[in-house]
Length: 106
Image (cartoon, rainbow, N blue to C red; front, side):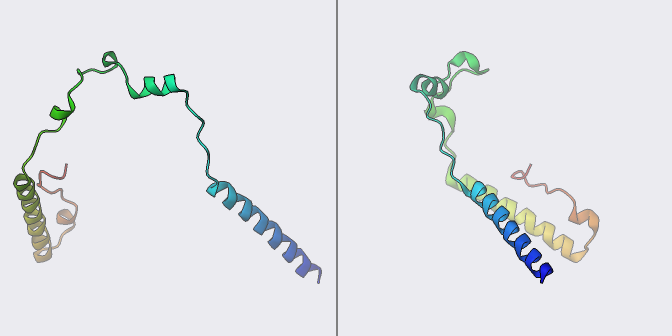
């Protein structure tokens, strides 16, 4: 009977520890309010902090036609299919761990 009571007490203690750990892990932390001048300084750094001059947003990413992207993806898929077919024909560990020649994966 004493063993049963001891097991029950230990089980309740373990349940309390698990509930406390779960509550601490799932508690949402409220971020500290940031003062406006500090937030403004973080969002708009001066150009002297960077190695390159600031690039206008219109020239940041050049326009790439969708057809060119689709051709690159199709070429990548063909190369991967060829690699799979060569592995299926003659499976070796060297083929399994070799790098692809696709330019999309670096």
